[in-house]
Length: 68
Image (cartoon, rainbow, N blue to C red; front, side):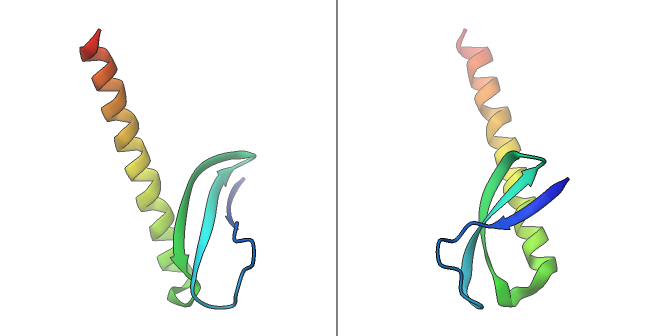
């Protein structure tokens, strides 16, 4: 199951919120999103954060490989 969960301590109906993208019980990333921008923008923000995290992981892996 893929879930996007609002993790704000005090969520409001509008404004920026912090979300967690999870697959089953594993958190993949966290990102922020303005609720009033709608679902499509929320999904795109999640996708961009996942992509950014994957690129950073690849960079770290390459650095480790070339450092040894």
